[in-house]
Each structure stands twice: as structure tokens, then as C-alpha cells.
Image (cartoon, rainbow, N blue to C red; front, side, top):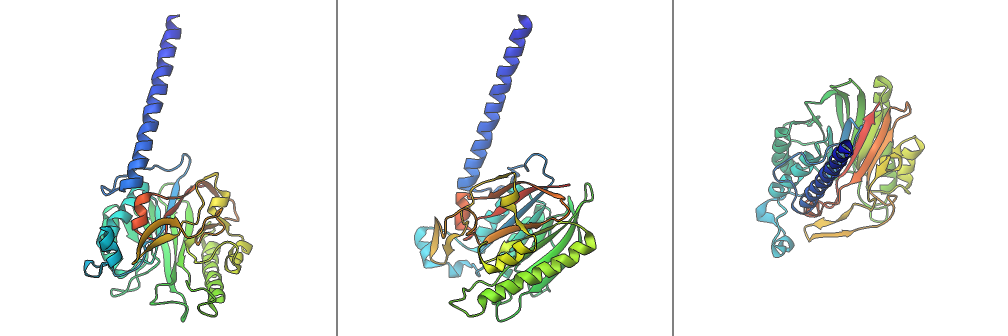
Length: 329
């Protein structure tokens, strides 16, 4: 009887502890969703069994100075300067503390504000074209966990590239613990529709072909999986992404053990203000931000894919962040 009482007490204590821990996690998430993470705390550990997290964000490119603050934002009592938004982006990154961060629309002005914050958190950028230029599609990596083996930067060809903002970056990494290698390709494809600018669909398709070709050279050289992501400005039903699918690339959400809400992830956030309303709603096939995996050797297990719909990010950019927790075998 005494042992039974001890066991019962222990079980009740365990249940109470678990309930308290779950409540704490829920409060952390609620606070993050509404307030962000200005203190740059690490809030959300990887899924059990994962050894790699990759985060992808389009950070909305504009010059972002207080002198040019759009009237719509002034009237809303909000601030969309790069100075303010960079704090939010740094909070997103540090809350999740991924090994790899892929950014799009990463302007020189945003670089000046955001990069020092990410450096402080232990991140290094893979490639900058020169002292007076910036890579609009950079890849950053956590130096304490990841080693950079090789990197390259490719602007997309004119005229389907405005101000060199459309480009792709490739990088080969090696995990410091375990030595596993992997390739990342980050891009922002041409954005105009075929009805606005003739040849746009074909241009996007060729841009994807170029990325796959460069990634394949690296895959053959290093014999490791490829993670290809970014703002692709087209959906999974497009002829552009049919090229990737036919080449064997698979959407991370489709092969993930667990995935969250798969709505479009693209909403209003521009000089006219911001709104949480999705530009499209569907099952994931209508998204324009994509995360693909090419893994013919079966070295990747996607534990979870998440599109982070935190409320505070609505005022940072018109794209919700995505991330995947991965087990490299």
C-alpha cells in the first residue's frame, strides 16, 4: 500500500509538471505571436530527432528610412523602417535558432541594420558580391555548428531581373558534429506575370533550370542532398515548378512527418499598410514561397515543416517565414 501511494504521488507530480510545462510553452508561443522576440531569446527547440533546421524569409525590400515613412503607416501609428523591422527579423531567427537562414529581397539598407544583429547571434553570410554591392538572396549559417565548404552567387539574366534583386546563391555545408554534408540553393525568381510582361513564365522556368543545373554539379561533386527554396513567384501547378518536380525535387511539406497550416503565406505588407488577410487560400499548392528537397540517396527525413503565422510578422514583410526540422542520416 505504501509503495502504491508513493507511485500515485509520483504520477500526479509528473502530470502536474507536464501540465505546467505545456502551459509555459503555450504562453511562450502566445507572447511570441503577439509581441515578437525583441530580446532575441532561443524559444523553440528543434523537433525530437532533428539535427538541422533551415529557415526561409522574404524580408520585403525598400529603402526603409524614417524620412520616407509611408503616410499609410504614419496614420496607422506603425513603423516599417529597416531599423525597426530588422529587430523583428532578428527575433524570428533567434527564436528558432536555425543552422541555416535563407533571405530574399535583402537590400543594402536591410543588410546594414540586420546583419550586425545576426552576427551577434553567431551567423555568417556566405557570399557578398563586393564592398559596394549586396547579395539580395543570401544564405547565412550558424558558425558554431556548420562549416562552409563552397559558395557561389548568380544574378538572373536581364531583362528578367530588376536592379539585380533577382538572383540565386548556392552553398555547400558540413555539419561540425557528425560531418554530414548538404547543399542549399536560395533564390528569388522573376516576379511579373505573363500578362504584364511577355516571356515572364519562360524566364522563371529557365531560372529554375539554371538553379537545378548548378545544384546538380555540386551534388555530383559532394554526394549529398539539395535543399532548394525561396520566393519563386509561382505555384506548384505552374509549368515552371513542373521542371523541379519532374527532376525529382519534392516539397518539404509534402514529405514531412508533421506539417502545420499550409495557406499561401503571402499577405499585404507594402507602402500602403499591412493586413493579415492571405492573398490566396488553399492546401499548399498555391503558395509562392517554396522549400524543395532533392534526396535520391535517401539521406533526409523531414520531421516537421512549419509556416510561421505569428501576428507580429505581418508588420515585417508580406511573406510569412517557413522552416523545416530535418534529420540528416
